Length: 155
Image (cartoon, rainbow, N blue to C red; front, side):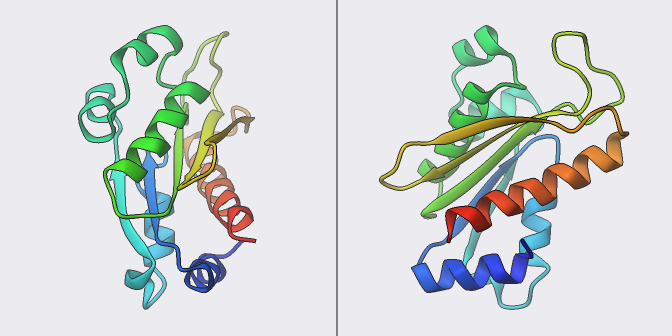
């Protein structure tokens, strides 16, 4: 879904949006704020590339990182919930993954975990395997998927 449609739907529902991004480095926030007039809907974005930033800015628990690693649904959930708690937003999307190059057998390049948190509803998370298509393509696909999740949450 295109950013302008996401913003239109958020306005309709009276919701503001926050993002918590790791492997996309703020690309979801950039897509939303590329649209003129987005400031009435987009509250803020957190780029928490390091584990320390995830802990300090979003309240991700060190125990969660130690148990599951940064690229995991539990960490994505805590990122999304932390973005809601640290902002005035009513909806937050989080993304953490391995854009590449690299990865491991256990956590391959192209694995990206997403979460959506909304005030008053359980946080939802999923993992998508984009494959070892290269850093730029993984980041672009993860950005598009994050936007699609926001759009679906606003239907």
